[in-house]
Length: 382
Image (cartoon, rainbow, N blue to C red):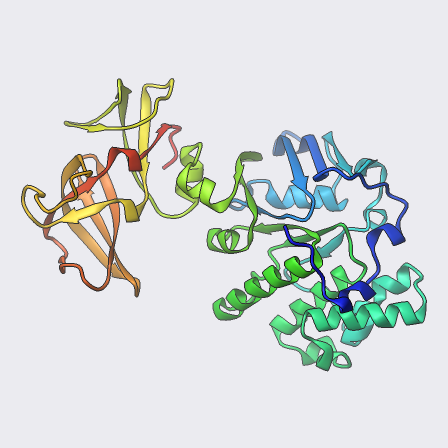
């Protein structure tokens, strides 16, 4: 992780200058151990363990109610844990109130002070920390330059677009260089084009600051674009943590495989390298202790043939099943085909150009290399 900073960013104060919290030289900046949150009998978070690496962009990804925002609020100090512990550097976070943790926080709805200009909003946390006027001015100027809002410094929030307000909120959160920046769905209220542009801006700002970012989203594409690592949440637990490629290519559970990207899932009984699904038997690689199993295959790994016996399929596509085209969706660079087969529905991507045209209702053969399927225990995920 690069921590190279432009000279202007050196004008921004450092976290170590603003707090007595001791920081270690470890690669881990934040540790969560057995962290839980209950509301009566309802379990919002169930004993999670997590080490956050210094300088990384870590995303909490999962459906609504999975525990990702609860975890962020526990780290921020907005909620008290029911059990477990958190440690920032050498300091137990449970002993610190939210304002004492000096963590940067950015929400979806900006939370800018409407009666203050952009400059005054960004300067506010530095005044709270009693920095001198020259120090505040240098730091605010650097933060506004970083988010490309210097020319809007004297405007008020109501005079800014949604994207500009979000960048102003980001500048206010990072102006004192916190060790960790927490973001809860910060781009959720923006339109798609602006959201995609700001994703790239967040990547740039993260590289320039070298700060640790913890980001909450339910948007899998956003998580894949932004993150060094992704923690996938489900029903109050972390199902898997890894890079985007690890989660996509090697999911450990059926939930993760289906939540990250598109996939085809064929269910059956596993024994001796074979999965029996209905009247068909397909070859699989790997092994699991459970007999009820599923094989998960990504759309780009499946091949389509219009030949009745699939003679034009690659020789590596040893698994072959008959199917019927149920739907076709043009995606620009590819066409997505939904294919009904005797062992389950398949999703196949083919290049939009250079491939034979396939029509809805047409009979086809779906083939794939057994090594391209991921064998998983069938946990009942629909």
